Image (tube, rainbow, N blue to C red; front, top):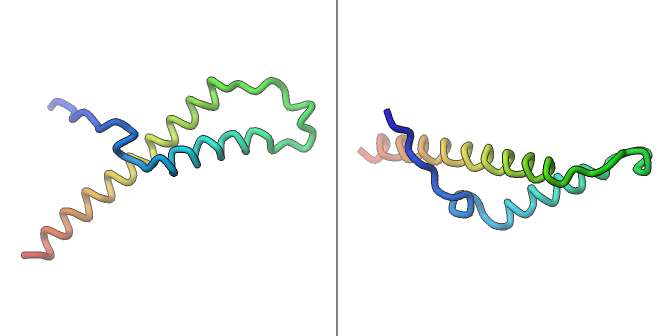
Length: 77
């Protein structure tokens, strides 16, 4: 069975949620007792983590939306 292609992320979650996730990852990178000893910030890795989190959130929203549509269809009969 062929896997259905997902919509682009920009059509799955709001711009505000997307930006909030990215900003939160950036803020979390500063949560060190001694920031000067934290090492070098890897922005590529932070972007990858943010993208993965955005997709996980979008997948969860899609799954719950699908379940609600099915339930709504059943209840409307």
